[in-house]
Image (cartoon, rainbow over the protein chains, first blue to last red):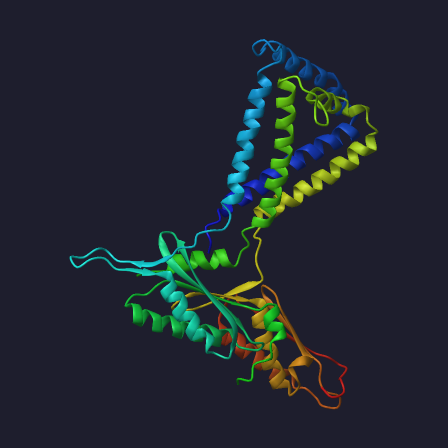
Amino acid sequence: MNSTNRGANRAVILLAGLVLLAAGLSAAAVGALASVRDGYTEQAPGVVSSVTEALKATPLGGTGHSWLWLAAAALLLVLVILFVVFIFRQGGGHTRTLLSEKPTEHGRTVVDSAVAEQLLQESLATHPELVASHVSTYAVKGSSVLKVSVSCRRGVSPADARDLVEAQLLALDELLGSSIPALIQVSGGFRVRTAGATRLA
Amino acid sequence: MSTTPLYRRLNRRETHSPLSGLAIVLAVLAILVLAYLGTEFVLRAFGFAPLLVAPQALAQAVVNAPAYPAWTLIAGGIVAAIIGLVLVIVAVTGARRARHTLTSERAATVIDNEVIASALARHAASAAHTSADNTSVSVSHRTAVVRVTPASGAAVDAAAVTAAVDEQLRSYDLKPSIRSRVIISTEGKVGA
């Protein structure tokens, strides 16, 4: 429902997994296989000395130290910023506008999400089958979608819960004169387990 | 207004985990490692003393790897590889949540398995003439297992319980559909 980029999440997990897998397998190979160990012992010092050469060849002003250090640090900083942006991109996607009609010669109509949220919440609160309900509005692919999450009492049939919420949504459609796409989420949880069982047939 | 593709998308997203928690933890670890290395690089560039290890010493430690006892390399490598493999598997598999979708005209509907189980338990209990506390139901992706403990001395009609459960499941019209399995306990309970 929220606008989390799930592909990016999976990409980050996949990348971390591949890095660990590759590092782990190479460490194990160096430890276990004599041929790999010999190859590593032969090659590794050469790599380090060529890096050292490059560092010596790129002195920074009068300090005598290489500017490559700073370039590498800047690269790492960019990566850090990318990861921070990635973390703060999680979740979100709420919207405060439910409906925004095209302007006519008489003006323009904008309906706030709060209208639908409060109407639905009020009417759902009167139903004894539900322990709790919460309504929020998200922008999904450019359109506003209502999310109605309800917790039923123990034993309430999911189909009944759906019908109950759908009836309220249809009443809302009637009131607004247009149909807002909606998601109904029926959940259990702690409050459901501690609340009494239903007395409905 | 056709909302079917939108509802399909909502149903898919609500029945699968976004894996945000794991992704955030990994991103934070990556940030810590990268920020540490970056700090050491900057300190080195201006010739200050390193925080923990100078970059050259770090590189030398990696080069010296074959000198370490072989078993530490193998054990550490295998542990890292297994963690990596688990992450790869998590990244490419479903990450399904314990939820089902319900066919519905007006809205996309997702139901926690827990809610389905408690509704089934109520109907199974009334078909078995026992209390709801003596029926336990567990609902998974494809099956619902209903366990009924009868009251001592009273027989439970397994066929009636199965019929009641199946009738309920049919009326919910869940996706993916659930098959039921009813198990009547051979030992009763006094006062059930």
